[in-house]
Amino acid sequence: MTAAVATAALDLRRALRRAERRKTLGGLALALPLTAFLLVFFLLPILGMLGKAVENHELATAMPRSAEALRSWRGLGPPPEDVVAIVATELKEAHARRQSALVAQRLNREQAGWRNLILSTARRLPEAPNGTWLRTLVELDPAWGEPAIWAGLRRAAQPWTDIFLLAAVDLTRDDHDSVVKVPEEQAIYLDILGRTFWISGLVTLFCLILGYPLAYLLASLPERWANPLLILVLLPFWTSLLVRTAAWIVLLQREGVINDFLVRIGLLAEPVALVFNRTGVLVAMTHVLLPFMVLPLYSVMRGIPPSLTRAALSLGATPFAAFRRVYLPLSMPGVGAGCLLVFILALGYYITPALVGGAADQMIAYFVAFFTLQTANWGMAAALATLLLLATLLLYWVYARLVGIDRLRLG
Image (cartoon, rainbow, N blue to C red; front, side):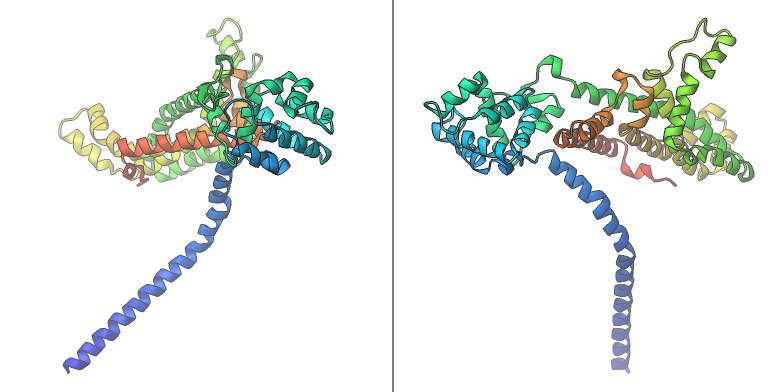
């Protein structure tokens, strides 16, 4: 009897393990399509972007022997004649293959004017040097006698580069390959990053100020009233972002409805500029992102039992004290989730600032698009996007450390 019981128990354990394995495999099979989708359309593009920020293949592609020779050169003093000879000879060959423009474009991203230097030299290079190749190059253009161009060529010969990442934080490398600050008149990217975070922070604050009372009202109403009002909150999602932004241009212009209304009621003596400046950017972005604040707040507030506030009131607390001591702390997970969602979405905004903002209101996404679409400088675009990604992850980490990631739960 004991052996039969032991055998039955063993069979039961085996059956449970098989059932558990089937359940695990079923869960993995269900998650596999989503995992593959995230890998192909999310993770791989991000890794590709990170690679574009540091890849450095142009010189090695167009002039492979020159790249190898420059990598072996220590970079001290003028390059040896054999290195200069390889560079000059292969530059002429690259021009014949129509590949010198690839090298010129890469060097011009590091220093304006080097594109013309490379292309004009490639066109005029003789078959044989006049004495030495270095002397021949200097006769064609005196810039070849300066250390900067050779230091730039040596950096371009490396398989990876940090010039784009350094430029994204207003740094560069000098002729001795040391990291230095760019000239003050060229230092713009840290200001752009600061402007991006400042605008995103203000938009998040305005969305919280407007969204918290609205979410509180929706959570306090009966469902038969709350649901239609919630549909009105979601209504902007049914309209194109471009249409909504263009509508704000019409409303905020000097002859628009808002200026006309404020003048008619006496708040303004004459119309003021509300568009193509920071005011228009803040107004339009707050309108677009407000639902992303209301929805997390509403989700959390809907789960707060009203009996808790009534209990505080019955124990002698004032309405404000009951709200501050009971309701507000319970709603903080929604505040955290809404603020984080709105802030991260605002960081990457491009269309709204581009249409309703001025030149001093463009955020970092505008410059990523500029380098991608207009100058084809994908390295700089990827570096700015990488900087934004790292800054966002750092802020997310700080928030998780200070507030606690468990407070982001929506219920």
